[in-house]
Length: 347
Image (cartoon, rainbow, N blue to C red):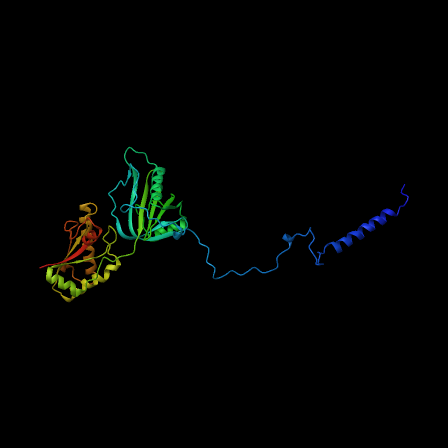
């Protein structure tokens, strides 16, 4: 039996008073300043201070593939197109001529990068008796690009909106391949003065590849005024014009219109003048095809002149193909000179 029944109550009150006193006195530092209790948690306290505004002068974070981040390579390279297919692989059709200047797109994994410059492209098939292996072609291309100091940019499928944009500006070609259903592999070799892109698309039976080397445009067609055309015709009986056509086609490119306008002016100034429009090519590809192409191009020039009111009876179209070169077909400069339209004075 408890001899003092009020002692437990008194003890409880004493504990409460001691606790209050400890809270009031123990939460002060040695200099008397209030300090936080060890049980406080700042993580649960919302920060009411406003966020610092973004610095408008700060550079934006880079997005997507950055060409400039690729190391510049000065590894030795051979002749364009620099890379080759492994043994037993090649183009089943006639070789496609290198285009000295064109504009094509490459896929970087996040966008289309449009490149202007020299272009090589072809299909890729396995030779008769050899099994097709996409992996074998890919490994060989990987190896060659690494030796050239380049990098693989991507191996992925472009989204539909990218494919639509690709189609809108660049028609299907043998080198572009089946971008609609297969992964597109892209490599880049960055040189001090240019970028070299390698594009490959393959499926379970065949593939396509393309090499694009960036280069600035250099005009090869110089404008001859009507007066100078007349002087050359009077002196030599013929004059060469550099008329630009679509690659492997007879379509006259828009930049050649000013030159044809000068021919129209010449014919209007001299109503008695009659001309043979002769088309010429370099020796790239099949001779029969070159003759056919030169004939079609000469006919296109005649059609362009008659469309501006020149009587068709004053003009004759003739295609001579590669048979009358004026320069060495062994050089690119010589080939450019051999691809020409000549006006020859008749009668």
